[in-house]
Image (cartoon, rainbow, N blue to C red):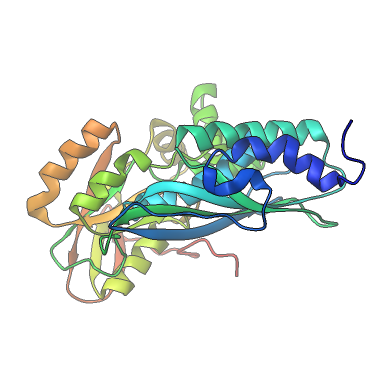
Length: 331
């Protein structure tokens, strides 16, 4: 018989979250804290990010995708620092309307990714909330001592490189939200599905982390839009760049949408949720990095060079692009 003193929270933790806590340092989620010991000669890399219903995802999104997205956002940060995942803490605030079938699917998604990326749950908190559902994750990774790749260490002359494709998630969010102008894009079903899926489920580039660690002079993940995040990196490193927007890698779906409505290039370049890696590399290291990326199965594209000065300028067809909102921001 179950312990009569066991609370509903204890039961939920034991049933849904304890199976995710596979690391011995988590103590089966039966203590107030966990222990994480980095390998000898390594630093711990810490990052945190969260999602809120109605802000980062639609309330009707699949629960397993919501769980995966919350974890993958943090894994993306670790990848951009060249870090190997080591574990995570998760706090979740559940409205009273959430059913256990939802929680079961949510934790199943998190469990699959925790196993796939070798990033076990170490602890967290479970609460009820009168407000929207929210999930907050703090993730930990390891890098050799003193080797974490920062955003403030780029140099004039470095190549500017991005992984994957840019803008899919921002366009997919507009589709998922039923944007009235989306009919003008005239996307066939497979292209529409690609954009929506890229919004629902980011693909963190953890397979590229070792190459980032070995070759990048600076790096960060693209979460608030390429234009804004590149500007952040350039400010931190006190450099500038001019980017030919036609060199920014777009998927077939994004190309089709922009061809139908050229104004969408702004959304592609400034919208959030790409979760690709933006990095700078000395020119003499670019070939070796590209080979390493190919071995890792991650496409990468050089989109420009850094120069002395300040500011980021995107040019398309000889004209400087002006953005109403250069970067996604909550404020």
